Image 1: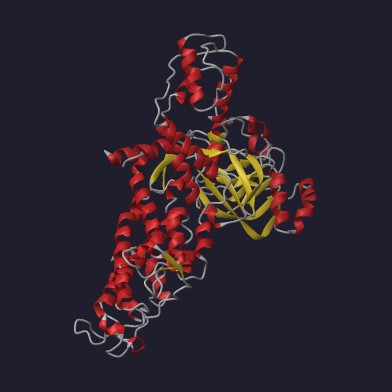
Image 2 (image 1 turned 180 degrees about the vertical axis):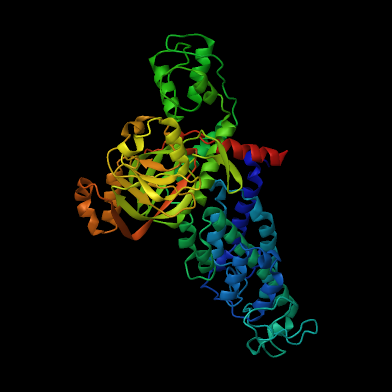
Length: 600
């Protein structure tokens, strides 16, 4: 059975697996009744209390022997190894009667919904889990037939000639692999454990392999959902954090996440249908087949809801304007080349753009914080979050997309482009000085022939010099200072910062990439007041007096505020509506070209 994305078979397997667990194991809370007459043992169920945590020391050797080599070599899978060490080499998802626990049920239920988060279920190897479950079920029934009171501690392998004794070390050595032999496992030769040694040995091995597979799946899923969750992964495995709480915490709280997932589902469905194309420039008053195609095309994305009349009327124009706004174009209501290009982007390509936005949001450093500043470069927007919710939204101006290319961290970028980064706002400066970089000083000198320009506009010469030998300069605070009246400082390798600007009219432009790399923020004074107030900084009450002065005021935050600058060409607005913001730096195209090259 094959449906879109090739996921359907795995979903069916997982659904079957969950049913199998519920029917055969009862998820550690349901015990099968003995068979009556010719009825199958799995036909009826009996509610039982939890069978208890595993206690046998023999788990240790079996888990160690079953660990795949990547758990010892791969840093991500090393989480599983560390968790077993902290759990004293006992299973996470199997109880003392070799039954899957409630945590196993919760994990499997969540893995059954990974597609909802645009995660491929194939790597979770659900068919393998199904086979492991069936194998463990068979072994468990065999043990129960021999002894209804079977338990992991009712076994002793000390007499087995195929095993060697092991030292009482805190963790298994790298080699050789070995079995466990302690007095805790020792029972007399007449016990059921001694008589069923082979059955127990197989059950320990099968349960250990299944437990490791589930632990690996938990770590894989957690890494895909939240790459910053490693410490909590271990706590969830060892029971320090309830499994339900942990799984819920992996879901992004960003207001953009769920709308993006809904949009992804929409475009994946659209990608399965023929897309109507448009090929001619159109304007209000036009009519004919091309207008009908335009109406059908706008209807496909739910922008146009009227009749397919073939007449470019006011309803068609308004639908087109809405399309243009949602694609960050000037909403002029006519089909020019730019609008035509966007109308003809394949739905499958749009679905991939949204899918990448979902992935970027899950992997964002913002996941680590409840209070932070986030800037999305293509969106030209700053969001201030507190308690995980958007408290303020400010327009921003970012670095120019134009300019010569320079190599930065192994890739070629425009020298004026704002970099993506994660840092901490440590200081707010009222009435900042502008220390001019050598590159900008050179640009100013080349564009201004007047030798007295610098002196008249408040520039001050410093004793030090640039590498070129020219004196370093800064501009005093004032109405002409390009930093405006407020500057936000955060350490970074690019010497960029967030600041006010005297050119406030530029914030009215829909596309706002005008700077040399730093980020200009609209209503910077309001943002400063909010950050200082939330910092409970006494300077919050003195901002007006600082602004009335021409002297710089350096205000250190008692608790720095995380700032994340990201590049996400597709996101949602404050109403949860999907917006294609464009690719001003061409990074999405670059990534697509790289993927295409790798695939070829």
